[in-house]
Image 1: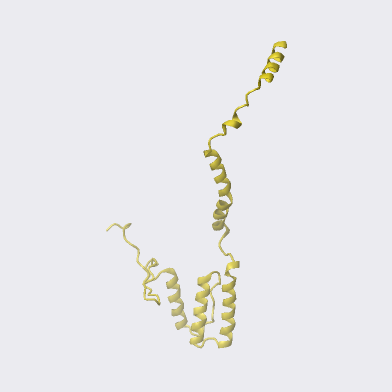
Image 2: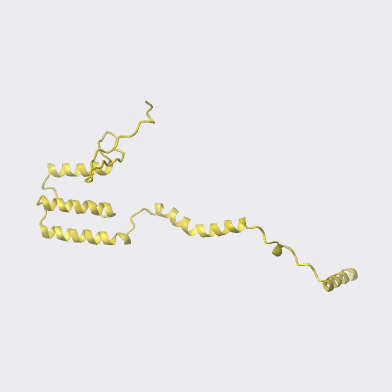
Length: 159
């Protein structure tokens, strides 16, 4: 079998709904990046149960969801008290509500979309104008009336 036609291994994580993740697995691993990190975090917590509680950077809805899961697990495992968990969950709720006001995406990833949306109406107008047949009435000089022709011929003959 050709190396290029070989299908990459799929993540072996089974979701709560019973479906397999299906994302490409990392090289030499059983899981995709996301599930590898999740399984690795659980493994490290089992090895070091007294390790400090660390939240992920709250940059998107997925990271907030992971943080909520970590708080719930910490409460169940009695690693943090209920009062502290309540404060952290309130902070996570605030972060979730504030997502619409944040933009952590690098500027170079945003610019092409912003530029294309700003330029496209102008480009569309120019293209429409280029496709439109020329207005023949504007390009032609209106025919001279009979008195104008007499005046212009008289001025040209006297010169």
